[in-house]
Length: 129
Image (cartoon, rainbow, N blue to C red; front, side, top):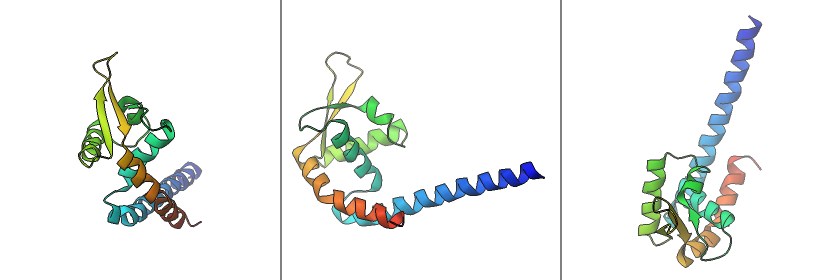
């Protein structure tokens, strides 16, 4: 019986984590919608800024894939949309033709700077801070 109770507590903790995650994503999505971004879009822009802080530096898609919580195909579609909106640019790696680089454009960096406080405020609201 004790194992069942421990399992129940573990399951409850897991459901609480999932609920907090869903609340945070929903809050961020609503806050960023007027800017044409969603939570996953912002996450990729944020990773590009923090992984490669200087303008013009590139990040491999493979490195992004290991840090975002999206499937490879979902990340590819997201990057295609961000590229279509001229927020990022993709290029093939000269050393390894299988590799693809992603670079934040000036427009992407400017939009990121504009929405960063909006995202952080939404995140604080969602997490009750």
